Amino acid sequence: MTDADNRVILNVGGVRHETYKATLKKIPATRLSKLTESLANYDPVLNEYFFDRHPGVFSQILNYYRTGQLHYPTDVCGPLFENELQWWGLDFNQVEPCCWMTYTGHRNTEEVLGILDQLDLDGPDKQDEGELMKKFNLEDSYNNGTLSIFQRYRAKIYTLFDEPNSSRLAKFISIVSIFFIVISITSFCLKTHPDLRIPSISNVLVSLSNEPNSSSVWSLQKDGTVPHQSFFYIECICNFWFTIELFMRFIVSPQRIPFCKDIINIIDFVATLSFYADLLFKYVEEISRDSDIVEFVSMIRIMRLLKLTRHSSGLRILIHTFKASIRELILLIFFLVLFIIVFASLIFYAERLQYNPTNDFTSIPNGLWWAIVTMTTVGYGDMSPKTYVGMFVGSACALMGVLTIALPVPVIVSNFTMFYTHMQARSKLPKERRRVLPVEKIRPNNPVSRRAEMANRGPPSTPHGGPAKKMAAENSSFGGNHKVSPVPTEKGINGSDVTKIVDLEAEDVRPSSTYLPTVDGLLAAADGTDVKIAERMSNSAISESTVVNSHNLLTNPAHS
Image 1 (cartoon, rainbow, N blue to C red):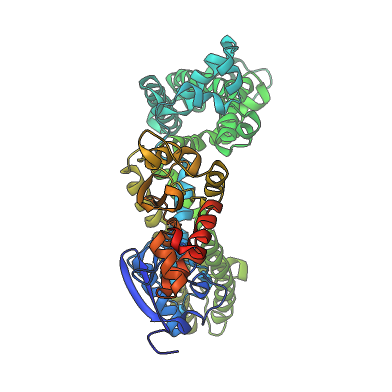
Image 2 (image 1 turned 30 degrees about the vertical axis):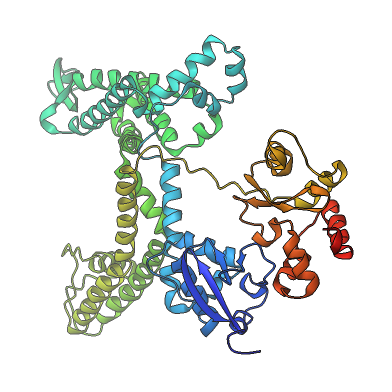
């Protein structure tokens, strides 16, 4: 075999590549290792194989066959590269280590986009009523027109409270909810200010002297301060709205069990319940005397700020940033606890090595507070080392704290930047993407069955238009969607036309198999003057009538 015979030409997406057949055999059980001239994509005229695939990726694939090293092209998206490798029958795990981080970067992107889809940061736009009924499993009832009044209005009320972008009224309700949250938190904070509190005065009986029979008079006594009465009315109005909102969202929720498990809904319920508990405790004398207990229980209301995450995409991104960085945060806490214990023990013994009458570190637990304040670079100054050894330990503690906290911070910032960048890019994408129709596979022509049917009918003939018109009319039974162009060539035996059939659309059928042999082709094959025509005759599917006529022609040439 010569060098030219060992070469193979591959046309991938219009770009021609030439290599050796032995090169393609280096990686067995792949698409390129099984190339034969009988494949549908082989062009005998150009002597090449055509593949309608990405030419840029194929350059790296062919280089993998040549060198045994699979590199990732930086100008190609990761999923496209994976699809191309899968189509060519290659394993993506064979990518070289130098390209692995770049190649797997798309997986992190797909994971982030999946999280953003679950968060639904932009909120769904106005939905069709049929799509909305799918959330409530009422699609069949909606299509049949058997929805009750409650079922119909349940979906509409749900969109008002849980989907702010669904309508203008839903946006207005969302703004009202945010307004009451801000007012409630502001009122909760301001009522603790001394200038906004009023004194609590009680009328007590005071004795004028210490003698047993001394006279007594009524006197006013200041027991303390209480919030102004206006704050109570503000809390009543805000919690009235929170109660209605929570009740309505629970009633119209499509899934009530997941609704009850949501941490935001639990906080909202507990905060609302604390307000009614506060009202109840005011009528109980024992508890009302110690108002600090009631105030401490009502501190849960400040957690209503987390309800803003339902209306703010930035807050939700921040929360999920911490979730995505949970490993780094756990690692940070672990090392902080480790070094806090170490330096608290060191500073305790370091301050005892020298005479120190003003030693602040009387125990190791007492030194834990100093270690926390020092490692977090806060430095209140309430405790400080006085000896030289203690100062050295304090310096080492401060440096170690800076390094320990600074190392995981870039990872957390990187995760937040990644989430926020993808959210901004996702918000600029069109809501509806253009639909790309899938490529319909062309049904191959079946010349054997067609020609066998024609043989049973006899030679095609018709007084109107000849055999060309007859075969064009019967195209529907020949191949379905194919365009067949029958071209009469020469007169065959007994005056019948030997017809050449040209398939204009079938890409997976070789051109040589779409011809019925002509008289000249049969004679040339019989004489051995044209070997290529004889080979094409042997590979083509010839009808029974053509075979019979050809046999008569070869055995009786004088008859022709």
